[in-house]
Image (cartoon, rainbow, N blue to C red; front, side, top):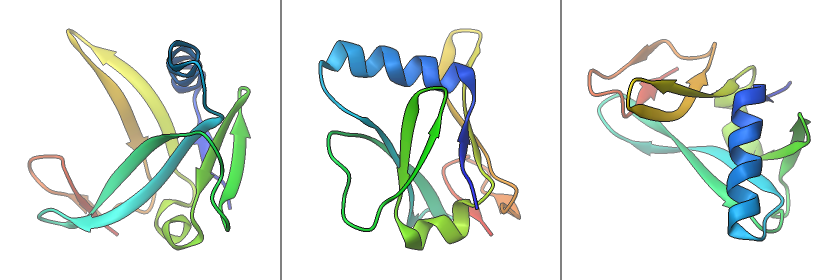
Amino acid sequence: MAITLTEAAARHVNRYLTRRGKGIGVRLGVKTTGCSGLAYKLEYVDAPQEGDITFENHGVKLMVDPKSLAYLDGTELDFVREGLNEGFRFNNPNERDRCGCGESFRV
């Protein structure tokens, strides 16, 4: 079981943590919401929570709670720029489909 970050995502996280002046990485999880049932949640982490599973890529720690890992196993977190837009992209092999607005997904 693994979750990975691309170099671009790691660079973005490191830049943000430096600007923030604190933090050890990011936490990736899922929440129940939206048209299709699940949505990604991503937050910066100052301290790990009990039970977190930690992955590290390109010097960045990524924490996931065990419940979310079942939906996220194999996911690659990328950071992309397309024209004037930029943001994280979740390349999740477990996704069966996504809602039309792009806010939620189904496994």
